Length: 271
Image (cartoon, rainbow, N blue to C red):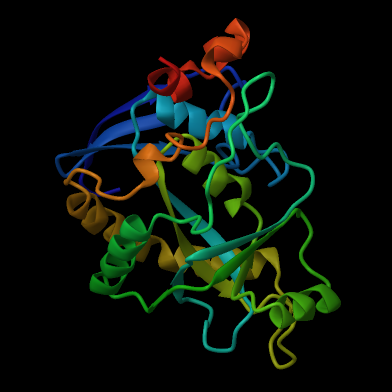
């Protein structure tokens, strides 16, 4: 990626196991960034096999405050066309095999996710995509399915009847874990297809997804370079204090092992 220098490859481990890949840290035009291959280098993990908790925890260990997910998605709306970028503002979790929270084992927290994506980061992201020449849609409901298969026509049309805008396989539980980790989270969703509901378009295939993503690579890189400069300011959103009113367990009752396991997340709140 042009402008990226001083790249280091970090092999990290977390209380939740190893992340999907090593984390690459580098200087992008004067701003430090970290990158992790969600599906592993070479795309070797299904959406269900991704260790979402380890991935987000690894970023937290490095001091990351804002997380940008670059994802492929299918469109459930006529006006969200292949090649477009969507920055969603709502999320529907339709998965059923994934660990969705860091909490448990004697420490309970009920995180607020009425608005699951950071509004500030999402707004800056949409502006960066637009200024980079992308056709961007700001807002929309993102439904996450388990995968790895694509939808049936009946499923796709059901999601449309629910008011969903785009469909993918990885936004959940990433967004919820990022909120528990008090990090901002937003998605740059690349529309690669019309899922399978569109009667005049071919059903989604892997070839179709890869073709659109390859075509959008330069746009994504340009937008990310623009975005990092917009983020060179302190956070003013509520994401950084998400746990302040979420933890309900009395601190003296939290087991030592659980406290150690979640120390990066909860130490400043438990005292």
